[in-house]
Length: 479
Image (cartoon, rainbow, N blue to C red; front, side, top):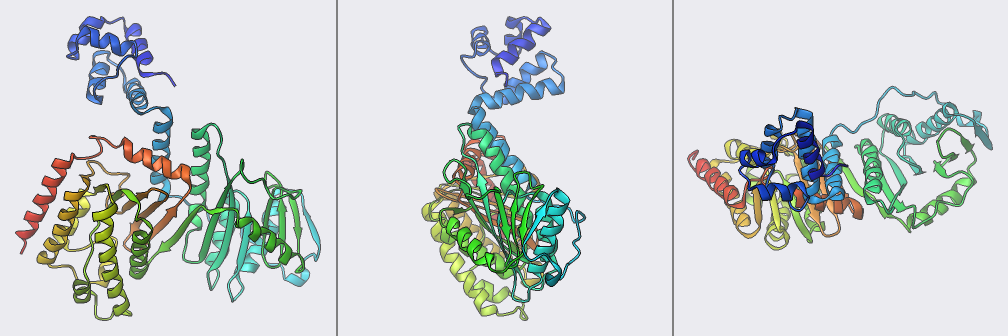
């Protein structure tokens, strides 16, 4: 990629402008601009870069290229690239999906299938045979169990999702994925992030999805003549590198051996992430409790404002017909205790959605919870909860987001700890996805993402505290 100063020099030479006049236009000493052109310093901010672009009469595409080169120069190409990966990940988290029209299998009764080896010579053979086995496994009344060592291929993911959607009980999928840890950290991160994104559609109420990973440079592949394997209790598949051929074996005696080999390999691997699809009020409370339990090394957080309700308030506001209210109220109490310890003891930086906090202050509703499960909080109760947040804001590096993060301001939570990252996005009041990720490259990319946030992304700590105080005062007026 062309450096900022080289690109700026090119634009100046192409337009044959005077460096002295350009320096005067931008409010710079001539010597300062020459140091920028020699790569000895960078402009103080993006506004100055835009001034330079205006003087040079750059078109929008050229101005974007100049701004991009400036941003890369500020933090370095690798760190900038990792931030872009996180941007892409957050942007695509909601829309990660596979189609529903790739293949609808026709079930062949087990007694009519070949009992021993069934060669698969092309992609169509692989898809049909694999679909048949997966649908059969998912239809078991006690719940199926599928083990896979293969990349998250779209067509195969589609088969698993369609089969699980038609199941009566959740199916368990243990998925072993090979990640990369090469000398080119950026290249490895790109591929690894795509691996994670491609698995997200499998997070659903009907799939108990358990992804594991290993690095190709650390643990060699399973020593078999086909590189990938997938098996159910009735069928074993050996698949080629391109997933367009292989061998299927339908015989009950081979399964125990393959299962033991696979499970032995898993012992040397780590979970890629823990995940769940949360469609219930109770599930979201459990997720909050789990997050608090796991993040006692938390350093940074972007979140819908972390508002917590005490046991008494929860008891007053849950709807009378809410199922098993006592256990839910207890969860609220446990969460408040963890909440106070977490943010006053461990958190160093807290970044919140201003719009989300203002919504709570005006309505007494927390968007992540279904509005038909509780009565709205009174203005007095809102002030109490907001004051709790104010106490936290005094003890951490507290900021409000200045801009939306892909329209997820009111439904995004990123918690970064020393050795894990918790990510939750609320797509609606009835559905969200929740991940706890421990893969080191991914965590490092999120750390870079937090480090790169600046005044264009965040209000200053002083501005943020004033905004919070004003929200509290405005809420008091509602009483």
